[in-house]
Length: 327
Image 1 (cartoon, helix red, strand yellow):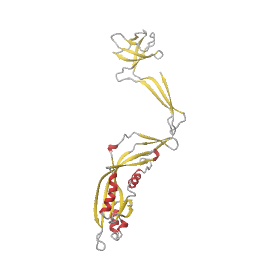
Image 2 (cartoon, helix red, strand yellow):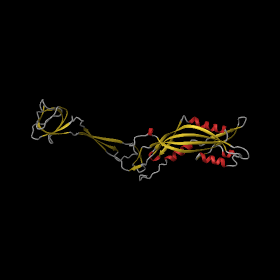
Image 3 (cartoon, helix red, strand yellow):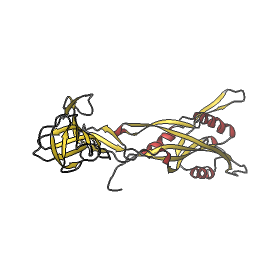
Image 4 (cartoon, helix red, strand yellow):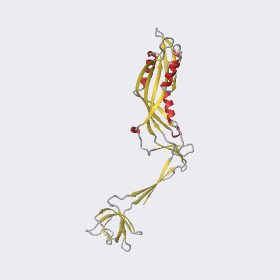
């Protein structure tokens, strides 16, 4: 779909992980004196409840060899639904090293609630309650299962599985030879708070140098300006001095002065500067006519960061070399 072919098999992992919770469920039966008569592991398979009911009703020997058929367990994924309460910002990206030494990236997953039902088929009430008591105490009402969802990205998540409700029904599957055969079916409904993941993208290019320019930015009121002055004036302005066009017009503080380009960087502007009038420094006495002005940032520093050693890759623990150039 969308021209991308991939298979994370995450839903399969959720189904397998859910079923594995209930493997090795053990049922014991006792003699009248309280001694253990037999112990058996209750088999569990993936399948719909209706399928097992048909098997029970279709076995003509179900009433004679019931111990072979029951107890049984099965489970099924009954649906999934988008969960907006767990939605993360779509633009967040996870990073990991790929086998080629480059970077693998993957956008954050989309949260979905997976609905599961566990079915328990027993012959008598005692068998059912014994098995149910081995399950219910572990869900309070949730149990968190750790699942490695995306091995290529090293993503292992704690996935809550919530027990929503339980119910049971009694079915008569006979008569056979004049006798009714009863089966009790327990149904436990769960919600698995999972995720659906997009494709993993690989990039063999590693960023080995980062360069950041720091500017003295202009605010919305234009209080940090560049005055373009007319050549042919006199003197040179001093950093930090005040310049003005007389008491009636504007004044400001000098940041820097470029006698080559005749640009005067100023801030803390008070009042209004008029074109074709001289800008005069109160300390230096420099004087130039104002042509126009520009609102541009002034480059203060350039910060360059490189790894140490230079040939480091994502698998190494490295340091960094920071170089700062000030203007």
